[in-house]
Amino acid sequence: MSTVNSTQPLANRVAVVTGASSGLGEATAELLAARGAKVALLARRADRLEAAVARIAANGGTAIAVAADVTDFDALKAAADRVETELGTVDLLFNNAGVMLPSDVTDVRTDLWQQQIDVNVTGLMNAVGAFTPQLVKAAAERGVADLVNTSSIAAQNIFPKFAVYTGSKAFVSHASRNLRAELGAQNVRVSVIEPGIVRSELQSHVTDADVNAWLDDQLANHEVLESADIAEAVAHLAALPRRVNIQQLTIMPTFQTN
Image (cartoon, rainbow, N blue to C red; front, side, top):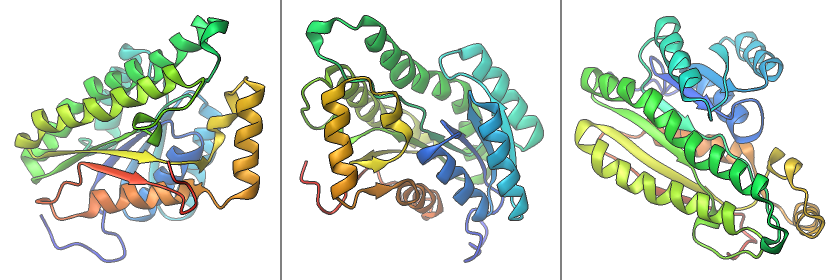
């Protein structure tokens, strides 16, 4: 690979960020563009994507908005084709779309269970399926490509009312290790990021009153992670020498113990 530019270490990279309309995805897309990557922002909310693309352009970056639902594989495959046509072969996927919908298991909220499985598990694999062929192609041509999946500290820990969410994130973490075993030999680095409590829109869909009260207390009384912290981690992973693959990165607020 060419010498890394210290101000734009991701120059000539082509990145896709799912869940890019808010929170971790939005912050990461903007930072990757600032570091020189051409970025496709993918999510359902077209208006939010367009606003982020406008900010990136105003700051001298290159980005496109791709409105698509990660639970729809055909839509993601079409998105992948569009990104390759407009920006080039994707060599960085930040696979970040996700939802957190805790509930008492005795409430039998199968709708919430299914939504978390659809987005956090099926959606993750849909993005892998749609974009991995380009990652493999890019790695063969350029020597390296990156697949970075967003999991959670919940993948390792136990939280009442979070059985489906924690299970879905355990899937993300373990699937990432297996994907690395498959793709590493093809120079595609696979990393999984497991954040602790982050200030983001993830809470906005929570309907459980007790969980909302707990989250409100954590956010009000502690210095939690910001989306920008995760964005820095993704940009760091992508800028490492191609021989270096950080398999799993757990990022915790200093105060949070588990």
